[in-house]
Image 1 (cartoon, helix red, strand yellow):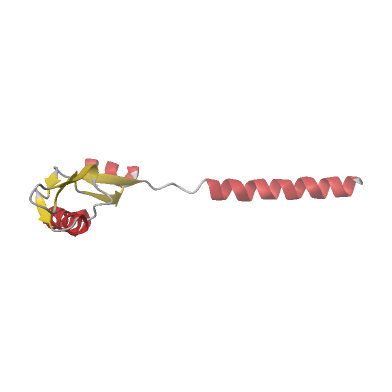
Image 2 (cartoon, rainbow, N blue to C red):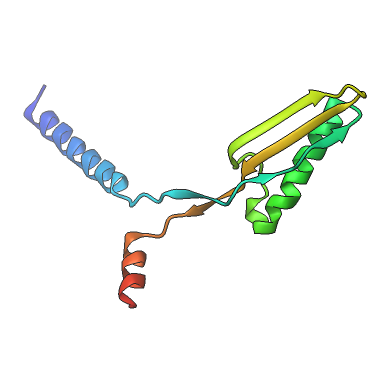
Length: 119
């Protein structure tokens, strides 16, 4: 290989390194899960297991929404417990329990510092 080709190759490598470094330096943002006190559907009865499950989740969601719209997702809930059992009288009884949670962006350190200093 010629000296010119090596010099061009080194220059291209340096440019690529600078570009990658610039992209990699972009500040990262973190999301935080914020949870409330546990919410329970209470025992819910349905003629089928599917019906009882739906009623239990609907009841849990209704109660979780008391904390605000962002808290109504069972998928985001923490410490979940969901159980269904057949009843002697027929049908099923289900219970859904979990801490309703939401996801929020964590404030940047600069914002927190400015709040703390009253700026």
